[in-house]
Every structure is written in C-alpha cells, then in structure tokens.
Image 1 (cartoon, rainbow, N blue to C red):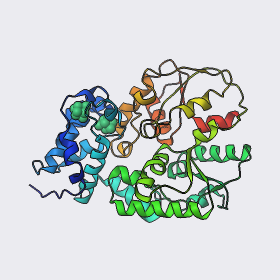
Image 2: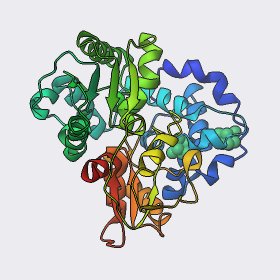
Image 3: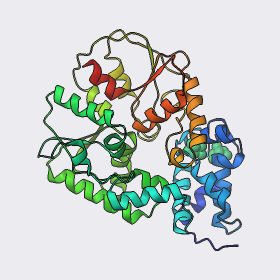
Image 4: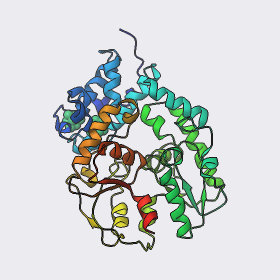
Length: 366
Ligand code: SF4
Ligand code: SF4
C-alpha cells in the first residue's frame, strides 16, 4: 500500500474518535442525498479519515472522490449530537491528500491559476483593470472577489452602482484572490496566508475603515479565516446585505412571491440571516415567504466546497432539490455568486421562477 504521510490530520485524531456513528447526519447531508452511498456523508467521511490516519486504507480514487464531494455546507455539524467538526476534518483531510499528491486535475489547475494570475480563472487582467476604477484613500472599500469580477460581473457592477447612487465615498481595492477556493481544496496554508497578508496590507494602505464584500465565500474568509491567521483585522468587515440593511433605501415596488436561499458560507458559517431579509423587506409590495428549510436549517445549493468544478453532475442534482423546495416562489433571491449560478443551473429550462441576486435586484429598484 502506498505510504500516506499524515500531517494536518494529526490535529483532529480525537475529534474523529468522538463520532458515535449515530447517523443523524444522514438526514441532512446534500452530497449523500445526491450520491446515495454512506461514504458520501459525514459519518462515512469520518470512517475514511480514520482509515487514513491509521494507515488502514490507501488514499485511492474513491477516498479522494468522497472527500471532494462534500460541499462544506456544515449542515451535519448543526445536526450532530456529538458536535463533530466535520468541515474542519474534511478540509484537513483534503490538505493531507494534496500534500501526498492526490489533487484532482480541475482543482490543481485552479490553484495554479491563483498562484500565477491571482485569480482561479487564469484571467490576465487584474481586478482593478477589469473593474476599471483605480483605488484611492476612502473610508469604505469594496472587495469584489474573483467570481463577481470575472464571471458574475453584474454583481460587481450592481454593487458599485449602488455605492455611487447612495453617494458613498468608496474605493476599489487592489485585491488578489481571497484564498477561499484554495483553502476549500486543501492547498498548503503558507500560500494562502501570504495572499491574506497582501490583501490586508493593500486594504490598510487605503485607510479603509469598513470593507464591503458581495461574495459569501470571500466574506467567510475575511470574517473567520483571516483573523485566525492574522489576528483582529484593522477594519470592519460587512457583507453587502449588512451594509444595505443599515441604509435608507427608496426602492420601487415589485409584485410576486419571493423566497430567500441562505448561502451556507454566509448563514451557517457566519450567522448572517437577518440582514438579507431586512433588505428584502424594504422592497414595497413584494410578498415574502420562507422555504421549509431556512436560516440555519437551510439546505445547500451544491455550489460550494469545490464540488461544482470537480463534480458538476452531483452539484447539479443538489441544486435541483433546492429549487424544488421553492416550488411556491416566483423569485428565489440569494446573495452569493456561487449560489446564484448553481441555482440557475438547477432551474434548467423552468420558466415558472427566476433566481435573483439580491444586490442586482436592489440596484435595479433603487
Ligand atoms: S451525526 Fe455526528 S456523531 Fe452521528 S454519525 Fe454523524 S458525524 Fe457521527
Ligand atoms: S458539510 Fe455538508 S456536504 Fe459535507 S458532510 Fe456535512 S452535510 Fe454533507
């Protein structure tokens, strides 16, 4: 059996042992629902981790697949009576897999792009060149993130447009990838911490007091992961919905029934549930109805944790389930470019509802 060097996983040896195999996680795990095997849910992933830790199983293709079909949604952590930190375990396991050379080709290309071009897409133009607004000293900074800059460009355009309409003295940031995608993949920490430092230094140099972000993945990084490595940040970190919830917005009315999908990285990971709902409540005449699984019980869209890029079929199945849960709604509003894109894919040819990014909607109605 090929040797597997355990490095990162050592820190969770005890955490792995507290799983009682009760199976409560089975009822919530989106990857289990899409795949159907016990190995594709938290309990199974813990068994695989235990096997790797003790040198009892090889790090073969099936181990890699089961570790990388976890969307890191953390719904199992909420459900687990033993409070097993499965997302940490999965991410540390991925880090050891990468360290031992087991990285999926799609993920390797993404990480190499970030190292070479500072974004996962291999785009040669910087964020600043792409957004076309030079940074300047200001109290509010907008960190657009790679996805909203290069792919979901309407989201970054809408955020900038809103900040202008509200007469906010803001600046763009000479940003590079926040490191989220590399951390989810399990790329070595030193590279990610180096990127964190560059971003924080650039933000600090502009005298920014409040950093506004429109991507749930970037937000989780700045809110939770950056402070773990760099200590308390010298600026406030707000998701665009938290920023907008505090503003007086005069929005045009809109008819129909809307619901809200909580992005896992914004909701369960960072506890932001009220702000997006407060912004939606500012839209006159719009009827709002919650889905059955909402706030901390929200089901994942399937777009996170690197699953979309490496396992699009499984990711699509998870998205279709979530869209079906909003059967009654004309609009599924959400506020993360990954969720927007994946839910649109989950919608397929359906014409009975639309998936809408909240920032884009606010800009349209403002
Ligand atoms: S709910 Fe927690 S303790 Fe129970 S099987 Fe799942 S991970 Fe293990
Ligand atoms: S984090 Fe989500 S996808 Fe991963 S094991 Fe837990 S419930 Fe399943």
